[in-house]
Length: 320
Ligand code: PMT
Image (cartoon, rainbow, N blue to C red; front, side, top):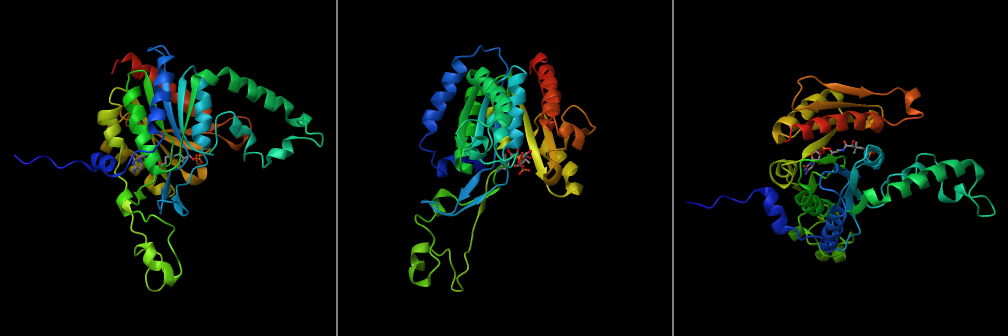
């Protein structure tokens, strides 16, 4: 009998080496899990976009869009609901509690201080309140950064295998690359644009000086996560589209293909004001929408996490 061909998801890990820090990430995760009671609710939140290097010594890369708002804001809400949170995030993307002082208010770091170097009065209350929350929840939050899609996939697999439990949830808000350059095809050095150095570019630039990108599809890891790595846990994935006409169809397709518990669909331009929740249990679409007025003092993640955590309670009590 012929041996079954390896699945693309398995081949990926044979052909793309693990990040150098992976053993340390596993140790940190183990230590974090060891300090918590086995019955405590725990969630892995992934956040931010993965990048795809075009060179081994990376100068150029392709990036996936995501500021990290969804993930960072959701992580805060999970903490408020008593969850422990593993926050697997793109390095330098938004982080729980700190996010309130970055990007959102169009302020630079130095704007928070007066000429004497003290915190400006008008920001003091907000800073004190976020600082006290960050302190309060610091032992319940494990921060793990990634940069490339390869870092992300190795980390996801390692964490999932450690976390796979009925009281764990996977909340996959990161924007994951669909195409990449496999390790074996990566030029070692910076791709050269000038013709006299182009033999160093390993054929990536043609005679007309055009850069030719030959990207392989990233295998879909959701199936592997659902069926193997985290088959005891509740899995919530996100579906991002820019075309409204495709959102529901694609979200339903994801639910059917991967056979997990929830898909949250969002459109890029309205993602902070509305999402649609589709579940394996209900036929109907459940929309969560907030008005511009509500958005002034609330985030949509408050409403999303309220909804999702109720579903998680039910999931845990069904003893899946
Ligand atoms: O961070 P913000 O700026 O607030 O934006 C938040 C967000 C729009 C990025 C977030 O809400 C969101 O939608 N994240 C998911 C984006 C995404 O990767 O969507 P997708 O349709 O490409 O992938 C769908 C699912 O397949 C994802 O759960 C992903 O984990 C999974 N996937 C994707 C690629 C891949 N190779 N394998 C996968 O398993």
